[in-house]
Length: 206
Picture (spheres, rainbow, N blue to C red):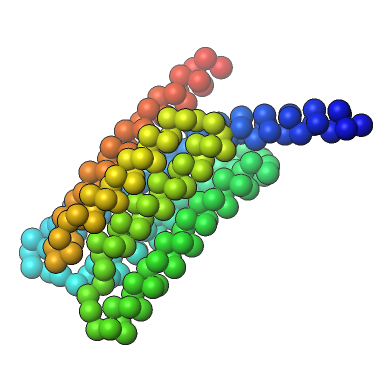
């Protein structure tokens, strides 16, 4: 009986990894989506600053992040329904990204309240750095769960981005935004396009 249970557990793990990899490949959409959304937001941020408009960052980046998170959640839910699956693997992956969103909301709330209570500017640089650190951590966890080691390179890239963002001047948050935009193109858009190509080749082979 224990041998049978062990075999079942092994099959469960194999299925978990298989679904995780399939989900990651199919979700090239999310890499591409964020790889376009963030650079576009950086461009808007730059144009507003260039025209002398400041102080909007306190709501602009949270709106971009939360809005993108909602779109990603709706897309993920739609894909799960389309595949007619709601496996343990699907729930784990969904919960990991939900934890990321909640952590970002907590970071934003803390920085926002700090700005209000102590009458100072919203810490855009610190917020973008926190995003980079959390993204790197979540991607690393995914890489371990689904055994896609190349994702660890993406994680390292996000952690390096956090350092680069912190090295920018807090008095000119646009520079931190530009660093974030460039990093997103490299770490999201390009891998997303690669994943899409892999998905297309897999579909053609089928």
